[in-house]
Amino acid sequence: MKHTTHTEDFIKELYTRMNIMTPQQLEFKVIAKQLNIYIFYWSDISQALFLKERSFIFLNKNLSKYQQWQDFCHELCHILLHTGHQGQMSPLFREYQENKANNFMYHACIPSFMLDEIEASNLTVEYVQHQFNVEYGFAFKRLEQYFSKKNSF
Image (cartoon, rainbow, N blue to C red):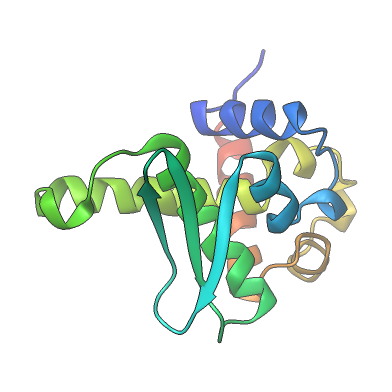
């Protein structure tokens, strides 16, 4: 019996369509190019922007490569799944979108279908951090999510 979430299914389908099957293939510049998303670097906080049918992700240039990858996946959710200007929506709906984007970020940076392929003895925070190019705390939280879900079934 298959126990995956909508987010896990969405990300697996998205990456499979782009022929991204291993952690080494997870590169935000490649993903952005395939999805026609323009990336810019600046000194402000990372954010997504839509302008005349085009999608843009502005990444903070002062972040580490790990943080930029994590921010990219957060902003990717806004581009793929959200519409509207957050400044013009109710605070509760904005909070909902941010929570959804944060959840998406963890799954897009470290997809469950890729974790499923890793030998159980290798599923350590350090291993996942280095394989998926994320921060230590990020890998820790994602593995907590992954194992919590596995143990609930």
